[in-house]
Amino acid sequence: MKLTAYSLQLRKTVEIANPKIVTLKNGRKAVRGVAAEDPSSTVFRILSDKDVAEVEKQIG
Image (spheres, rainbow, N blue to C red):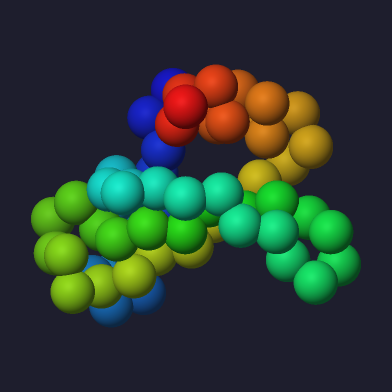
């Protein structure tokens, strides 16, 4: 599974480079990183409960 997110700045779905898992105030997990195509644009994706374990394993 590739980590992707929709970039509002680029107006398309891009792959996430340098992903980091963050916890939101309500306790949900999300991935924050930069777009692989344009390192100046930050992308963010909220994860479902079943995706969290898979993404943590993928990031390391």
